[in-house]
Image (tube, rainbow, N blue to C red; front, side):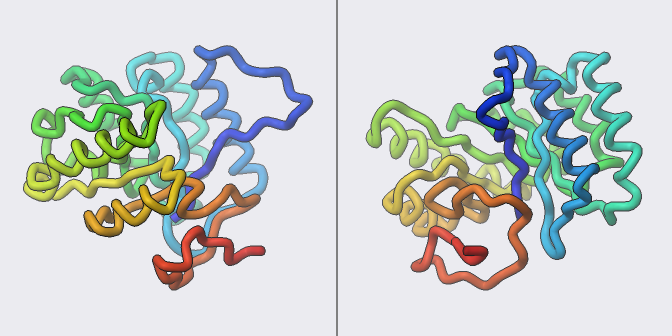
Length: 211
């Protein structure tokens, strides 16, 4: 699959820190304008977690989705970011509103101890750790801690993923841990469009098949 990212033009005015909902809408509208769906796989589009709990933002986002979702053969997947360690029951319930528009729902978390046990079965397809940290030691500690919960994830039939992989060492650690989904500069650099389906040996990563 491919993931849509916010990449403003150098001359564009920066958006405020709390304007993530506007960024997400801009990404979705640009996608509709260009009609750039992948020929295979899924396209993950960003949805800030707070969008789900703010009725006005949620309505705007759903209106954009409703105009094109049926024509896309449901190749959309939701990449819900800034998910807290222990989201409230009410916030989790709002995820159900996304089901008509997305084939897959992925939660993107920064806490490796995300409370997966509190998540109802069948609500999401995957949880992806956004790897961060000021040092390699912190990043690898988070990676290892996240995978300590692998048994719970498997029991709930929820895939684990890791994104923001920056080095070959981090990538190899995930391959050794059999992480189903990987992304970041150490897997594939940013591209101008969706990546086509391809068989690519792990030893040859990062993928740069479009160059």
